[in-house]
Length: 311
Image (spheres, one colour):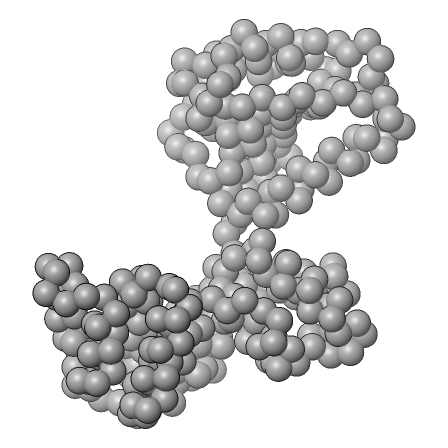
């Protein structure tokens, strides 16, 4: 049997691979043989010997080839030609964490129904669905609002999301998880802090904005990274405003932008309130500060403070 697991979602891919390993262990009742080959160190001779070996004491032999497309092209070409000859006693799982080159012959040969499975990334468009699935797995009692809040707090990091949901489920038991629980237990994502800062700037609350800047600086996040995240948030505001002016129903803006509903819904009132002139002012200030930091005219932390004081 040949299987092909690939895609950028390392978390779900790893889960699927572990499930497969456990399935064969249980089916063979302990008589199980497994070997893992690394693509970066793979030769055709090594692949051939492992996939053609018949285990003496095992009923099932599982061969996992990790990061397949890190192997030299000549090795990949030889494997492609050899696929039909792989021993029936072996289960070969080709794994590539990320997006392989679709032009390669081996990719085309493996990317077939019933053989390949693509693990798409967790992003702002599907983060809530992922949290729901993990909540069921960990028996976490969490509502829709808290799901959106957790997604905004952590961001599209499936490993951390799963860990945080497990932590919250253990802490709360059968009781419903609250936003206060999330604030208490969950490590915040940079974009959560940035959203609070942008929220303060757009509300023209300079006192709160200064407090948010101080929190960000104390958190140790690189100020240049924070400035980039702020710029992203302003871009989201502009996209929301554009959709509203095109006549898009506010309840459909998040799905139209394929974005997390939580930040979109929080930004909607500001997108309606502030003019393009106001948003352009933020963009121009961000561009000025970005140039100042990159040319060494201003240090990163001071750029953050200036954004608050002079906007």
